[in-house]
Length: 82
Image (cartoon, rainbow, N blue to C red; front, side, top):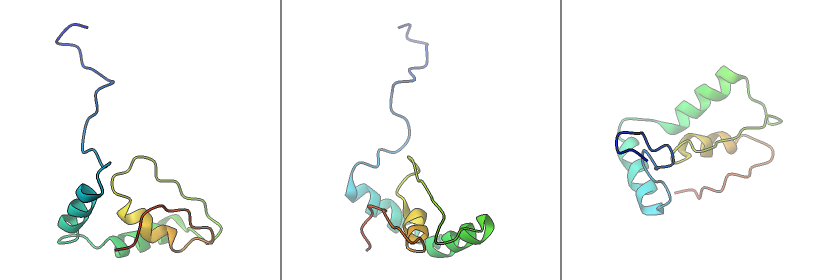
């Protein structure tokens, strides 16, 4: 591959495979964000119900999805509460 070609197979952004990094990121963001409030706003805007199906695919630390999943009848969020 030519050195000036963009390597689409190369990872970009933050690698959230480390639980320590996730906790650090969420802690930093919680200083200026309210994940639970943001989740409520999303639930209301999308008119989600307990019967809704929500998927979070590669969207960071799942901080907002964690709170959304608590409102669903079937919760398969793999994130542990703090």
